[in-house]
Length: 37
Image (cartoon, rainbow, N blue to C red; front, side, top):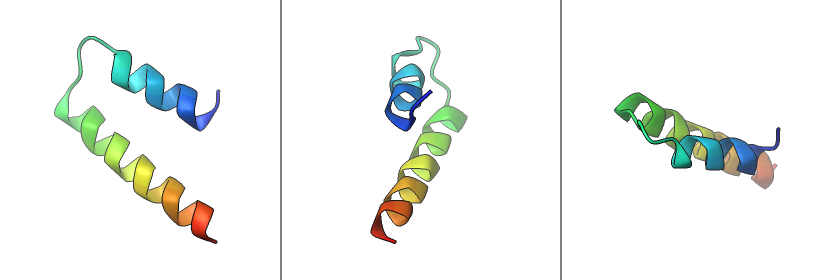
């Protein structure tokens, strides 16, 4: 599963919890830092 597919799965899940949102934010930050290097 690719990063974008995982994001899509998280975002489209009907029961979205705050913890999922925080995980999403952390994933985005990690992904950005990986792209910069």
